[in-house]
Amino acid sequence: MANSVARVSCARDFNCCPDINTVLDSSCKSGFDFLCIPVVNPRYKREFVRGPSKKRSGPLTRSDLVLSSHDWSMFIGLKISPWLQIDSTNEEIRRNSEQAFKQELTWATYLSVPVMIIELQNNKVTNMTRILNTHMIHSYWQQQYWIQVPLIAPEFQTENLIEGIDEEIDRDHRDYNTWYWWHTFRTLCEPNKKLGIVLELTADLPDDDVLERWLSEPIKAISLSTSLFLTNKKGYPVLSRAHQSYLRKLFKLDVQLILTGANRHTDKGITSYVQYLDHLWQNRPTPDALSQFAKGYEDYLQCPLQPLMDNLESLTYEVFEKDPVKYTQYKEAIYFALLDRVKEEEKDMKTVVIMVVGAGRGPLVRAAITASKKADRNIKVYAVEKNPNAIVTLENYKDEMWGEQVEVVFQDMREWEAPEKADILVSELLGSFGDNELSPECLDGAQRFLKDDGISIPKEYTSYLAPLQSAKLYNEVRLSKDKDKSPEAPFEMPYVVRLHNCQILSEPKKVFHFRHPNRGEVIDNSRYVSIQFHIKSDAVLHGFAGYFDSVLYGNVTLSILPSTHSAGMFSWFPILFPIKVLLIHFFI
Image 1: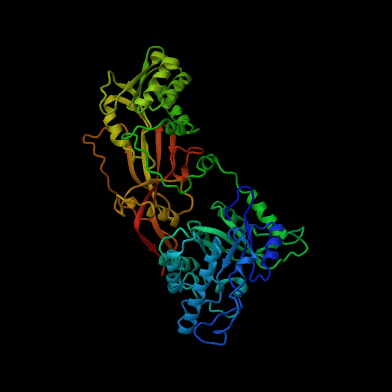
Image 2: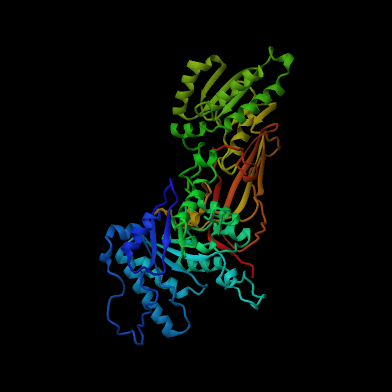
C-alpha cells in the first residue's frame, strides 16, 4: 500500500462487503488501489456476557480462503466495528466491546493485512489504548494501525446541526476538539511508529491554525466522502477551492486517499472521482531547488558536521560545492570588498592579501579569484587547510590553475603563524545555528591574521529559535538510542534536519548575534538568553527549530530563516533541539 510517485494512491471504502472478490476486482478496474472494509458485518454485534447471540453458532466472518495471502496483505485494509464502546461506563457494554475488539484485532493480524483502521468518536480511549498497546507489543506482524479522526466533531458538522442546538457549546472544548482526541490516544499509547492517522475531511473546514497543526501529525491517509464533491459545468465531481488547497498541503506528506460514500455522479461513474483526485495529485506545485535536493532527507536526523574536529570526506565537500547560491554570494561579497579596499586609481599598485581559513577543496579560493578578475584587482591568496586529503586537491589546483597567486598552507588555523597580515579574511565555518560549528571561537582566534582595518567575510550572523511540534521527529529522536549511552543522550544533542512533517508554533526569534572582527577588550563567547513565545492554539512542544542569517559583506547576505531564505540554497538545513519531557499547551 506504498504511495506511488506517478499517480495518486486511492482506496475505496465500503460499510459492508458481501462478495469481496467481486468488489476487489471491480474497484481495481475503476482505478482504486486497495479496499477498506469492515472486519465483520457491522450488524453482527456479538454478546459475550449474556444475550441471545452469546451461544450463536457459525463463523465470525468470511473465510481467509476467499483471497490469497498476497491479496490480503496487499489490497485490504480492515476497519474495526464502529459500534464498539470499549470505554463505556456500562460494564456489560464495555466487556462485550472489549472481547469483540480483541477478536477483531486478532483476526486481522491472522490475515496479515497491512493496515487496521480504528475510528475515534470521542476522547474516552483509556481502555481502548490499553488493549491496543498489549496487542501491538505481542504482535509479530508489522501491522499499521490507522486512527480515523474527523477534522470537526460530528456535533459541529453542518449536515448534523439541528435547529435549537446549544450555541454556547465550545467547539474547542476537549470533548469536541478532535485533535485532542488524537493527542489523548497517542499519549496513552506511548510514541509508536505503528500508529498513523486517517484524517477525515469534513464539509466545513476549521481555522487555519487547526489545519496547520494537523500537518505536524503522522497522517497516512485522507478520508474523502463523496458528499464533499461539487459538480462542475460538465457534470464531473470536483472539490471546493478550500478543500483543494488543503489537500495540496497534505499531498506533501505523501498521503494516500480513501474515498467513502455512494457514487453521487452515476452518469460519470465512480472512476471520475479517482481521475479528479489524480488530476489534483499530478498538478501539485513543482518542487523548488531546495526541495528537489532534499528529497529523501525529509525529517531525517543528521548529526551536525564538526569540521574543526573531523576531516571531511571528498563526497561531503562535493555536495556542498554544488550549492548554486552560497558561493555566488561569497563571490559577490569578495567583489564588493575588493572594490572598497582598493580604489580604481590604486588598482595597479596594490595587491590585496586574502586568507581563506578552512579552504576545503578550494571553492572559496575560486570565488576569490573570480571576484578579483571581475573587480580588476590584484590579489594574493593564502589557502589554509588542516585536512591532509583536501590539501592534495588544493596542491593540484595550484599546480594546474592557480600558480603563484595562491599559497597553500597545510596547517590548523589555530596554530598557523601568518607571514603577513590579511586585508580580507574569508571563512565558511557557519553551522545551521550560526555558531554551532565554533565559527565565533575560530574567527576570534584567526582575527590575529587581519590588519587593523581588515575585513572579515562573513561580517556578522544571528541565530534564531522557534518552538516546534512534530510527533515524527520526537519519535525519531526517542528511538535513536545507543546501547552504550544513557537513554537521555539522544535528547541532549542537536540534529540537522530537513523539517517536513512538523508545525512551527510561533515566529522565530533572535537568540545570539556575532560580529567579526571582534574588537572587544575581553572576548567571551559564553551566552545566555531567555525568550518568550506566544502560541495561538493547543499544541505539544517537541523541541525547537534553529536557523541563522548572515551578512557576508555590505548588502550581500545568506539566510536559512524561512522568511528570508536564500532562494535555491541547500548548504544548510535547520537545526533541531529536541526536548525529552513534552510541554503540552492547552487553552482551557
